[in-house]
Length: 215
Image (cartoon, rainbow, N blue to C red; front, side, top):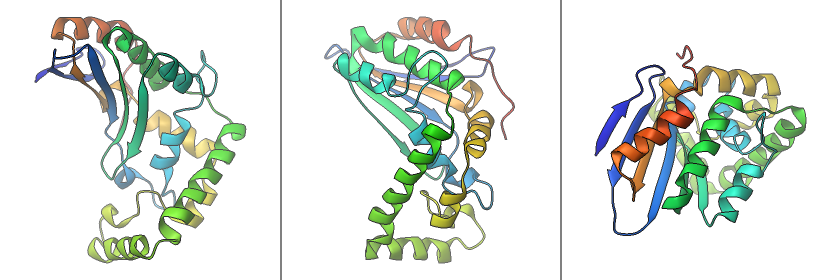
């Protein structure tokens, strides 16, 4: 594995070369998970994961996913207790595209009540179907709360229903600005690219993204 850190903004880049086929997997991880949420604001990490697929100052809502699909790629994202990840699997000659797209939403995410409130309802429905309607999931949530009584691992990653319902657009914007920064992130690449090639692309698209003060 090759690793380097950008000298100006602190971004970490990790590469595992694999030249067996002209494909790559590209991931951006942010060092923020449910354990970083403020009291009364559980679900912030997961809601922001959904909102990252909305628009930026240069691209329309949904354009990110459309471009990945049009170029033959697949994508997804996930939230955990300790970090949030976004990844794409795509042909080597399309890697630059997804790196550019991820850099754009790292720095330029834009959303309003029109995007946030419906997506908040989606998260509430996700909680209802995956947790509230599943006895095993309910047990797991209660078990974690007992196991980690004075630690944020006892908080469900998706959040508590009443706290999700109370999250606002302002909350989401503040959480984004607080945690989504190159010095709080890592690029992880596996596939058909060399360290020098990746370094050049990372410098081109992520070098201009300024570091922020993070907790």
